[in-house]
Amino acid sequence: MKFAPIVRSAALVTAVALIPATTAGFAQVDGRAGPEFAKLFATYQQIKAAYVDDVDNDKLVRGAIDGMLSSLDPHSAYLDGSDLQRLETLIDGNYSGLGLSVIMDDGAVKVISPFRGSPAEESGVKAGDFITHLDGTLIYGGELDDAVQKMRGQAGTNITLTLFRPGRDEPFDVTVTRGVIELEPVTHELKEGNIGHISVNEFSRDVGSDVYAAWEKIKAEATGRVNGLVLDLRSNPGGSLDEAVALSDLFLDSGAIVSQRGRTRSENLLYRSETVFRGDMAAGVPVVVLIDAGSASASEIVAGALQDHRRALVMGERSFGKGSVQSLLPLGRDAALKLTTARYYTPSGHSVQEGGIKPDIRVPQLSDPDLARRTKYQMRESDLRGHLVNELGLKDEELENDKTIDPRFIKTAEELKAEGIEDFQLHYALQTLRRTTPSSVALRD
Image 1 (cartoon, helix red, strand yellow):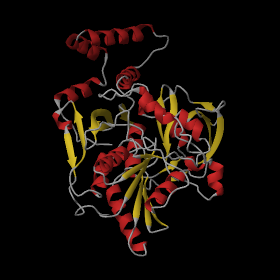
Image 2 (tube, one colour):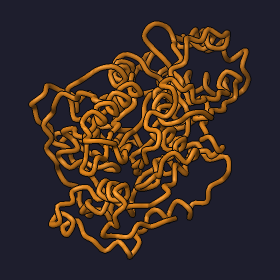
Image 3 (tube, helix red, strand yellow):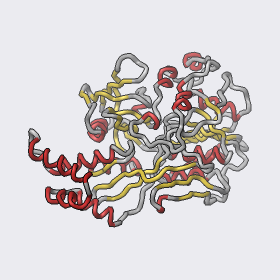
Image 4 (spheres, one colour):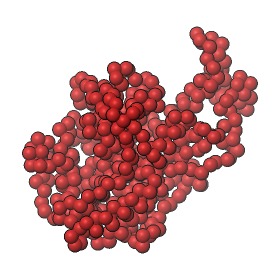
């Protein structure tokens, strides 16, 4: 997520002044802003005069703000109190809970992805699941923040989630034990054959530096030269734009990383490789980037940059397709506007919005026993209600092709498990870097 500096334009000051509006304040807006605001004021008056219960101004104004923002796209929102604190926690700190990235989709809480290694993932919660009940209480139609607060709690305590999973006939319950979510953004290990594996789980502060440190440790652990590197961005919902740029810069000597374009001149930016670490830190080492439908935003920036510069081979599944930039615009001391202000583009000028990053080699996760069902109902940005459209006009059938399984992939999850393969996508990437032939054939799109 890109955090904009404090904005003190006249337009913003006016907007802030209207937030605690009274009847007189609405009347002033009515006199200045034309028929659209006249309708807003008339609606306000009718509610105040005739609604069955008395409604205070704060509730009506907050509802108007939420309605305006929800009409724009799924990622713009008004944040105050616990909403704002939750955002800051995801960027900076730790918390006790389940470890889920969720959104509100037409009144339902939908899972974008569980954090890797989190209690939710270990309990079997999957990307694309709908959470309908918490401890038996219906949460459909409620506030997202209320649902998130209920899922948070003391580590070691349990909560039962009722899930609806597209492709299954009936909802089912999953009991999850809350844990301390460390928000450990980067993990690494050295695999057989001197192949490094670096997982980037989310883009919080210092991810670029953490990946650089992980690479140095891999080199120290290796017996001789490192022969390859898997940069794993699967189920990474994104985060800081600056950290996505910093991570991309680690693998590039020069050139563009990402550009963004918005309505205002200040949002038209080009980020280039600054060779902070004196060029490609892994020069001469082949790199595979792993992505899937849960790889979004900052993950797509990195995958797109390394793909366009031909620095890495991108494997896995088409990414989520969130090609928009959200800026945090302060509204006073304890509130802010998270507003979509630009679209971003890969170095070749490709817009990620809706279509995502298409892998060079498509490799489904055969280790997932629910693969066929989940693939058919896979959720991406293009499936979100009110999403920004790709200005180039993507055809729906292009995205629907990703929801089919190539018949050449005949291995089942049970067969792979019997062979000791718990993660087929990672296995395939490692086998590719070892220059041996995997047991299945990848689909080249």
